[in-house]
Image (cartoon, rainbow, N blue to C red):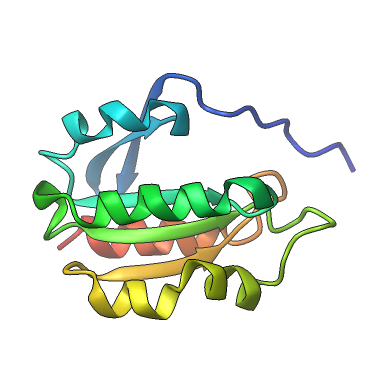
Length: 142
């Protein structure tokens, strides 16, 4: 069996077109370091996948603050939001219960104006990616 594909953090923006149930969806990936310009892309979004590096304990609080700013953005009031806890294959990570507790996921989901879903995945191993595609498909074909 070959080695898993290498992954690199997004530095700029990447565009990818997907076809989900015969509907073309454009996915714009914007790196975390570009947080200050994220709002310029909110206007035409019908969904947001907010990826959290769950192996980077130091960034957890910063990610939560960024997430709260995304959830409170007026143009995203009706967008479906997926919070994706990535890198779940790493050896030294918190449990999903611990990370959701730190994020106060129950409070976020209860107070957000839009529907919020939380999933876990590993981009490297592929774990959870089918669930992500199913979620995207369910919000894309409304």
